[in-house]
Image 1 (cartoon, rainbow, N blue to C red):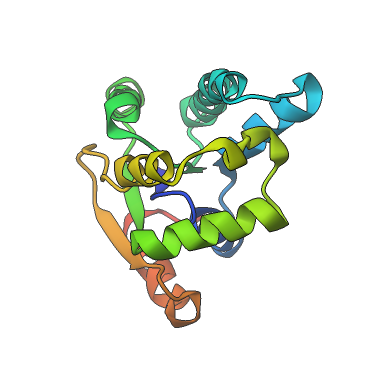
Image 2: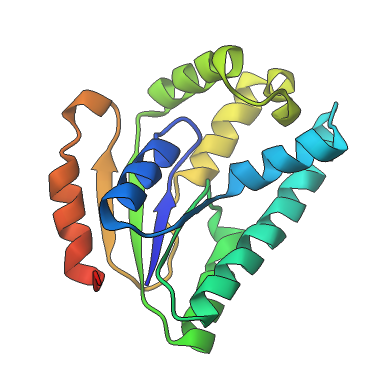
Length: 183
């Protein structure tokens, strides 16, 4: 089983993925962890290099996922997926490994996501992302693209993440357990 955690930047994907991983004892791969390791090792001081690392980190991300899936392991994959790039990869996993998926969509008002994102840049976002170079227009456009669901023929659980204090995690875990065989 692949549990896909998706949504725009600033929607709470990483927080949700960590909670699900801990509760269900399923490993999680965060694309940004890979990308930030590339920043730490290779450095990054501009948006072009950051975009190049984004491409490289996705290749590493999907290679890690493929290794787990090919060995029959359940996995959580968390990123700001974009349908035009990622749908074909998930479809290939299903075709090649006969594995099912469930998609958890973090749904957030874009104004809230933009505000969270801007705060995160100041507090704990890795400087290698060079987010301070993004215009508000580019940031919003990227978030709109990241808000689109992946069409990968699987159940979708939508989680409203406008207010983290109102999220019913038990309900989310129970919904996931309907689809995932917990050993």
